[in-house]
Image (cartoon, rainbow, N blue to C red; front, side, top):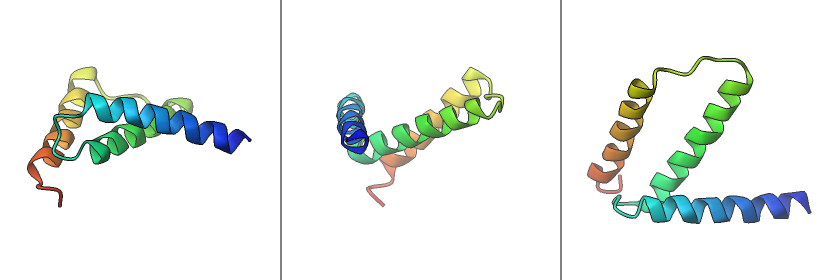
Length: 74
């Protein structure tokens, strides 16, 4: 029952992120990447790891997403 609820929650979240990333060449992969990064950031924070400065983190995320857009789906 919990797994089904989580599956629905994650599917809903994926759809919203995919819609927000609609300009990417591969919105589903961009949404997956954002979801994985979000989950990883949450795990790091819960373990007490410091986050990089916001500007550095933003630049890295933009570069990763731009790489998806320019990779031609590879």
